[in-house]
Length: 120
Image (cartoon, rainbow, N blue to C red; front, side, top):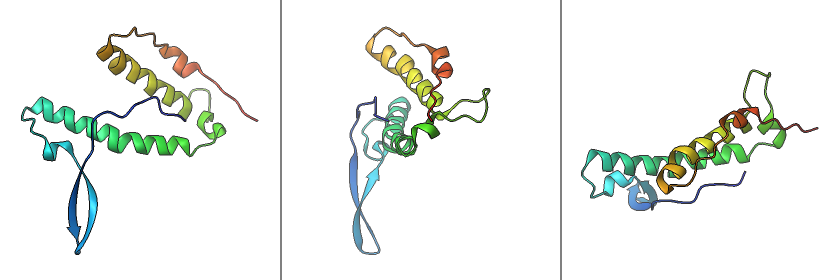
């Protein structure tokens, strides 16, 4: 699946030695931030965690699925992975994109769960 998100924030890398061999290690913005308020530290850490840890894991997991696996559901009362991805996308667009950019929120929440795609 193609990403609908653009990269925000920056990554800081630190050098550290483990058993005398240097390697790059991802450093949280909280470790290097000059932000001293709890709110600022929370936002910096949350941004880093979402962009650098959760997003790559989610994307890698979903991209490894076939279309059949993405839209499979064990029964009609369950949601497919595809429905859950549509729901996450709708949630981010509603609560982050529309809220921070002032764009109109035209989310179709029932449609996120009603979508059915079949293959085969």
